[in-house]
Length: 169
Image 1 (tube, one colour):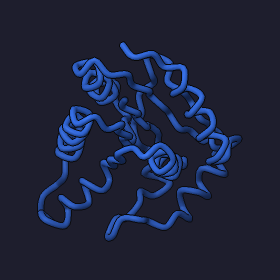
Image 2 (cartoon, rainbow, N blue to C red):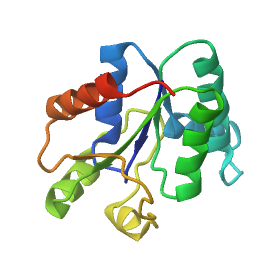
Image 3 (cartoon, rainbow, N blue to C red):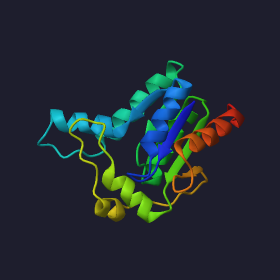
């Protein structure tokens, strides 16, 4: 199964995704980790879509090996969300799209401005950068988790309930 996390920086997406990966013993793939590694190796190069392209192939390879895979990235554009979904569909595997939001702007800002990066050398985006980022609306309904109201544990419970009812294609 492919579990696809989406949402703006600072909403709690990585915290929930990591907890889920630990709980269900899934392979966890985060685009920030890949992009930061590329920045370290090629400091003069502007990072474009390479991180996502690498993540797609890592996800595909791990799914082909029989692993459940959790991807963690903003996924601000519909075509990125479609690319993830297409990977699962091309392998005839189920997928779950999860959008993590924080509807309380004060809480979101507090989380975004006070988080401590867990990737060496990564500078999280500023609150202004988060607000200025383009984020396309969904054309389908993901499982939406609002961290303004849900704890990590409550979010995990909702995800596990959803996974339990997903049918294989």
